[in-house]
Length: 60
Image (cartoon, rainbow, N blue to C red; front, side, top):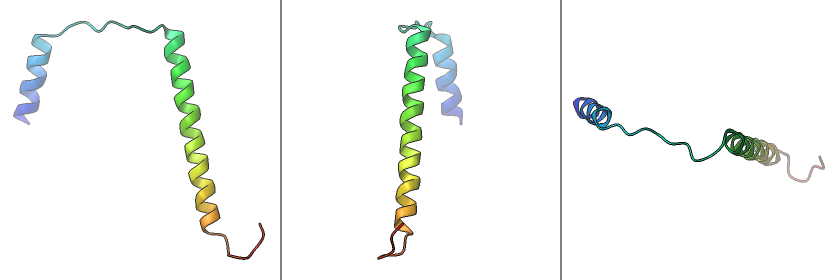
């Protein structure tokens, strides 16, 4: 824990301001893109799980 605290204290002593390079609209667009992709992954995983549990030879 001491090493973590030492790192934080050192970082805070030599802090540099963060400069945003993207506009708010660009950031929000990226968030929406990631949200859509995560939702698609979750849906595909759920669909795959359902297909794995189907009885062989049975039509859905």
